[in-house]
Image 1: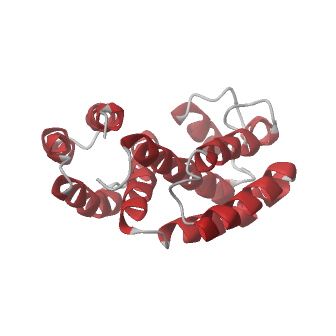
Image 2: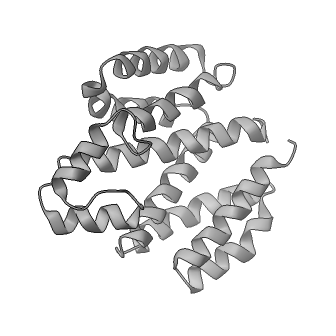
Length: 200
């Protein structure tokens, strides 16, 4: 692999958090109490209706808030200073710093951040996509949504990873294909995390 596994993990988590925030931006503000309660239960959030969930998402002290999740994006991007192109890192840092200082801009910049990372080299795009699809699949399973489109997209990424030596994912991946549920997803997720921890 061209990039270190630790850097690949940073890229993966940028993909996950940006995808998480993008989805949340599309739902916020929650207006339907039943929908808000389903979301809160799925992600184990201490909210009981749309109003309390909206307050939680806007609270800077809550891990699930816009600001706290965006802070995770910021931290991972900082760790990628020597991996991203100079221009990409500079643009991302400027956008992230601006949005961190004004949380109201977070939903405006997440798509731009994704566009920059998708334009980087093949390995960065690969692990960024892995993070995005894992986040989407996690959410779809939690919310009992259709997973077929995400699984089809993720299958392409898995094949590319196998070509780079990550063939130990195959058993867990095949199990997920046969049983697309939370247990299978977490088994695959654990396997990916183990590979990130192996010295590159």
